[in-house]
Amino acid sequence: MSSLPKNFGSAIDLSALRNPPVATEASGVGITQANLMQDVLPASHAQVVILICWSPRSPQSQAVMSALGQLHAQDSAKPEGAGWLLGNVNVDVEPEVAQALQVQTLPLALAIIQEQVVPLFETVPTAPQLRLVIDKVLSLAAERGVGTVTPDGAPVVEEQLEPEEVRALEALDQGDYVAARAAYRDWLNRAPANSLAQLGLAQVELLLRISGFDISAVIASANEEPTNLVLARQAADCEVAEGKFEEAFTRLISAIKISSGEDRIGIREHLVGLFSLVDPADPILIKARQQLASALF
Image (cartoon, one colour):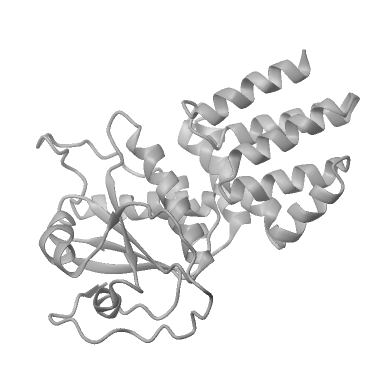
């Protein structure tokens, strides 16, 4: 972890961003020099703050910001709330903040815990990877007492991580999806109804399926060959990994309509597996379940 510098220096050189600006809707609270010091840092003693550093000149950073926004919205809809705060730093508008956060490349995601800055990633992760990163940060913060009190002051009972979950998270931290899958399977063998283990296994299996894929190329190929059922499944996986759930579900439902026999059963099972990666209350999932029922019957 590192602390913010006491003074804000000159603007960071982001001259590598030579693309023209593109209008986008920012997710989370816009971070300025003033509210970073007055509001955000103090808030980090009670809740984890996740910051996404972005620029209108960087489509990749905008994609990560949008994915984080969707994730935060999903968590905020839970009865207990999100449990974390989301902020965005437009490095073109707030160069002093970018300098203070030592932003060198985009996208850059950071966590702030008790006023300490923790770099998270400088890549474009998939939606399941983002979920795993956020969950791990919240777990680590809880060990330090951050996020263990609700806004009304009532203590939150933190669950102890299961040994298999610890193994899985350690494996994921090393990028070892095979070991993570084995850990989640061990957890499910011991506790078959555990929803966290089920979700973790589904996320890791998705990451294994798309490992090594050129996501854009796979989706483009599937669009060019709409009757290719193998490509349809691969493209749907890639779309879910990018958080494009509606596109993925629509693609597989269309594939079900033109398939039969074992192929149809396989696609249906694949689709149901992807359903498990989405909040059951999400309108997109509810609609897709209805469309699946219509396609089957």
